[in-house]
Image 1: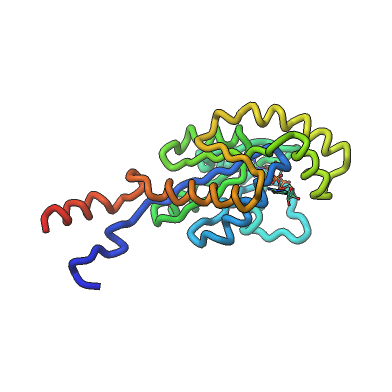
Image 2: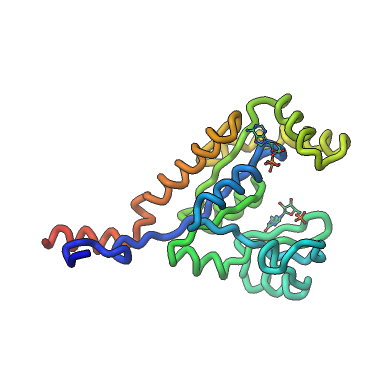
Length: 216
Ligand code: ADP
Ligand code: 5GP
């Protein structure tokens, strides 16, 4: 590379917080896995929780497993972007690792519901991109929940009942993608990520680059 060319540092960009939400069964986990495989600069945000570790889980990979006292201290010192009590335990998104990563140009994927999305958006609007995944129909949603084979009929019934309420929040998102064919949906979500990475406001090296360009 000659001195006439811009270095990668000069075109440094700020990372983003990429939120994927969907009614349960619409395919959020499937799309999230494919994205993480395909996009090395995308890391999964690791939440903190007070619930006990389950067999097969790894501290620091699946969650940061912490005590209630430590969780309460982090709430008091404003160390979470958002937090909630779910099924008797506390869960939260710690700011530390994400703040550092964003500055270095790392992107983070969030697999959270619409309430968490709202909180995160309030705290970090400029860095947040919100994507909502819809099923092609409620019949297909039920087929997917049944086909996944992880839930009883009772749980599937409860998820279907909740789905209507979750879908009603579709207009709180920046992008809405229907997951009919999984590859097509994945490509669309990937294109959203690619375009959002190129937003002018995230290209923090541009000012210097353009200054240099116009001086030459
Ligand atoms: P969520 O994380 O939104 O609850 P999952 O990703 O677990 O949903 O998907 C639910 C089920 O539907 C899984 O068995 C998955 O393999 C299947 N699935 C996901 N996307 C599609 C699709 N486009 N077409 C058919 N089946 C799909
Ligand atoms: P689990 O204990 O089964 O891993 O998760 C239980 C619930 O907690 C899930 O609905 C999950 O989405 C939610 N959850 C996990 N991490 C967070 C978080 O950081 N913030 C919020 N608000 N909810 C979370």
